[in-house]
Image: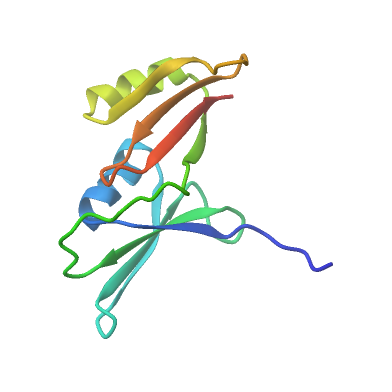
Length: 130
């Protein structure tokens, strides 16, 4: 069997600048690369915590001229991020205007401490204390 590696997850965003602010300034990711595709009328921006060679990243796709919010569907669950002090992180994110939809605490039927936040387009992000 060939060896596989998870490269990225792609999500569509309405306002690329707003999403870059959220992922880079609020969650501490870095903009790794960004490219406009004028013929296709879209921009791709890749963000993450490290280079794409060694890390899985998020691809933010902005389709120019999109005016209606995307239907997030019921198949997508969430992106998960590990954090050291989940209570402090959620306090800081809340103060920065990020919607904390589930306050930090133990998960149901378990002991892992989790929280959930929403990005500007409504995608759920689970924070897991590690």
